[in-house]
Length: 449
Image (cartoon, rainbow, N blue to C red):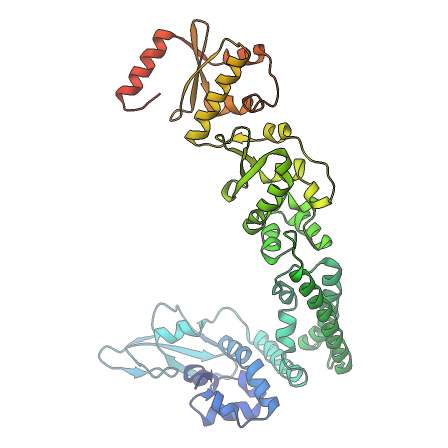
């Protein structure tokens, strides 16, 4: 039978003052070695509510009543061959610690396990005056709980209640709920702290009824949102992600809107959301002959191809694609982006096949326009691209050079020869002989060029 109060907790409680806020409970502790669910079956509903709502608080308060002088690591006695039973768990102990109750002066011997389990510290910490105040607060908690079961737990988790929904509760529904909690706490807290001697049960009852009505509106809203077939719902995963990564203004805007709109969509790189956008984007970009292959979550973007050169994969950041090019999927307009603009803001995917095919396509561009440049096979290990111009070979950063001229590689824009030449001549120049020596040197070390 599950414990409500296990034997160890019971042995500490019967020597403490905290459980005496309810005489019947203290007597039950004295009469039983533990309290189980079976014991609760014969109690009144009010007493069962007490066991459910107050026992944990009483145990926590009782722990604060106890201290020991000196350092916890050093026992008060080493009994050698002798043993003494721990007052709490009953285990035979060689090393003995003594603990003292601040309020009633009782003294118990315990072992090293129990002194740690019950978080019993040295005398410094909670003062007797604080304990008395906390004891009075505990007694008032019991009065409140006897009239409104679970009200303390409800108040402690008031804000957390909204976090349990699978959909973010929008601001216009959240604010009335939080206001009810604020008003309820303004009645309860002064009573618990002793600033007021009583409380208005009628006002509490009314506010609890208002809470139920507000929660019903929230739950109706959540159900409607959950049934809506849209990737732009403000799911709990999306809300938690943007709260961590863009609390202001992203998270605040999401709460205001109650759904993902353009001003938040480009800020959200939550994995499920990004994956859900792939079919949406493919449908929207079909006319531009763009195919999104996958969301690349670690890099917060998408890998895609153009049908005109499918052998070359490109990458574009989620924020750039949504904010600058594809916001129309959230705003129901037909302001389609240009392929050239998307490619301009993309980079070549860092894989051998795409890089080699891009370099070949660039050579094709040169040949078609009779530009006197010859692309030599890129050295992927060193991220180098070698281009011959006249009697010299130029050593260039491969990825960066190809990215600069992606619009030409894909035949989306004509670029003048002098622009290519200018960029090539910024690289390190070498003679054909020096280039051959470099190839031979890297070949000796097993690295191809």
